Image 1 (cartoon, rainbow over the protein chains, first blue to last red):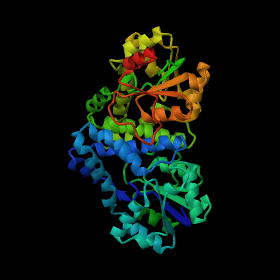
Image 2: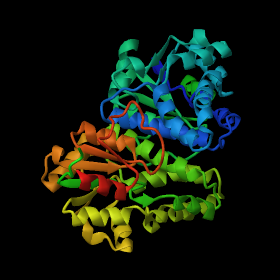
Image 3: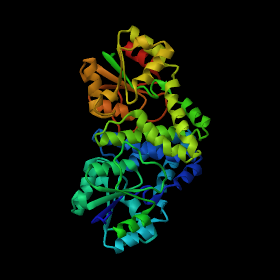
Image 4: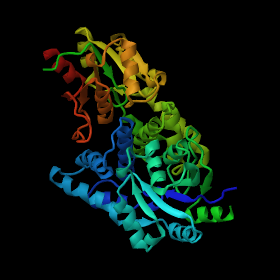
Amino acid sequence: MTPAPAVLLFDVNETLSDMSPMADRFTEVGAPAALAKTWFASLLRDGFALTVTGDNPGFADVGRAVLRPMLSAELRPTDVDDAVEHVLAGFGQLSLHPDVEAGVRRLHDAGVRLVTLSNGSTTVAQGLFERAGLLDCFEQLLTVEDAPRWKPAPESYAYGLGVCGVPASEAMLVAVHPWDLHGARAAGLRTAWVTRTRGTYPAHMARPEVAASGIDDLARQLAEG
Amino acid sequence: MTPAPAVLLFDVNETLSDMSPMADRFTEVGAPAALAKTWFASLLRDGFALTVTGDNPGFADVGRAVLRPMLSAELRPTDVDDAVEHVLAGFGQLSLHPDVEAGVRRLHDAGVRLVTLSNGSTTVAQGLFERAGLLDCFEQLLTVEDAPRWKPAPESYAYGLGVCGVPASEAMLVAVHPWDLHGARAAGLRTAWVTRTRGTYPAHMARPEVAASGIDDLARQLAEG
């Protein structure tokens, strides 16, 4: 039994957006494409470390700070600044995964309130939905920039619940990242794992209530109750 | 003025050990060498996420859980288990950076108390020092497995201080990782950044008191007071 929640809180980066073109950005500046994944993992690593110490840094600021030494090891010093900005700008040009549009429309039509909650800027989510013509399906686009701390800290989910005006039990976080689902579950929310990036779910993280291959599959499962 | 502290708390992975041979482990199992850095960043990412939520997972457990889907995307399913263990076993075969031995001996001879504080197992540090004949220079080898949380949580440094019986002001954390130095500084310790992995220090993290090119350079600077 998976009855639809009142509110679906969506993670954005990788959960809704296809981040694979970020690898092209590295190639375009003359760096190995494989650095893209190392960079994004390192961005979250440092962001989470700062969350542990009670800080709430800007997502793009951490991204730049992590990227600069990585690109400095690959490029001429005079090329690094432009290369950093070229990679960062890639966040503003991503597309949604192909399963997202149909799923979002179906969930919206079913009356589920759709909200994003990102560690990144709301402009990224806004651009994604504008380019796809989906912006009107979302009630709010939220960022932890307005919360006390990043996800997966409990205060980040509490911020989203507060804005939406629902208790944790009436909200479900949707994410590809087990760390996000773990944090949301610890904060009392229901959780749905998007398995698009195949893999086994880590044993030391709280298991999701729902596993869906994409947002379209999630919409189907929630419609079936 | 950089007078020597009573106790130097050393980070272990990458700060003392040269982790570059971990890339060979990936090659040996048939995966791209570049995955090594993505894997280690992802290991810390998930470990820190769990630290945010108040958990204290095993370092190797997180390492395995992060590695399995990465290798599953590259290898035949029947090869994944052995490949995961082959990579993990690499931690037990690393060597110290070439600047470490001379620096450790000089610091030990100067009467500074030398202690390690790792997010990983003490067996890794013990093996590193045994192979280098340096084990008798260290008073204690500590791990956050015995602390409430991983570094960079304040409780991890407080655990190290408690075991050593010194206030934070009499201890200096030594690390290559800005996130570790930031956490230690937030917990009141003095900090020394080992710059061996070149790069700029991130602006959003607490700046270190000392920047040293290696442990030998650190020993020299502290000897000069």
